[in-house]
Length: 121
Figure 1 (cartoon, rainbow, N blue to C red):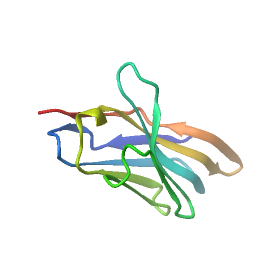
Figure 2: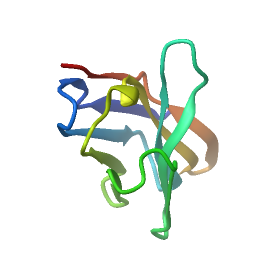
Figure 3: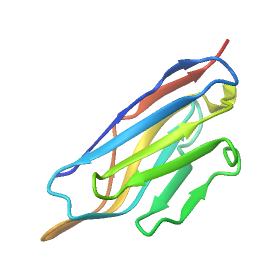
Figure 4: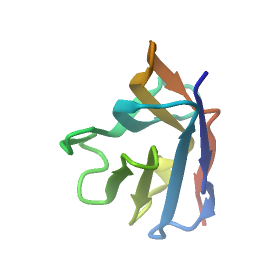
């Protein structure tokens, strides 16, 4: 069984920064994709950023230049550095992992419980 646990959410003023972290636990051999989604009240969950094992990253247009994703494959962790935060970044942020190999089983995907990020003055 695989668990994803996020940390680092909170309340920050516009223009501020936060760093989210996520660790995947279990008998994990490798993870193909790790990333972050977010869901604001009344809106659909959307991709924020993800990174494949080989290093390529993908960002939502709304966060390009402000957010940076990084992962440590050896530790099965992924982080999201969020700078120049805006009120519209307010949402619950979910850690996500896809293609989780725990021999002999491969899990298609797994989600964390979510962490609240609120950007407000």
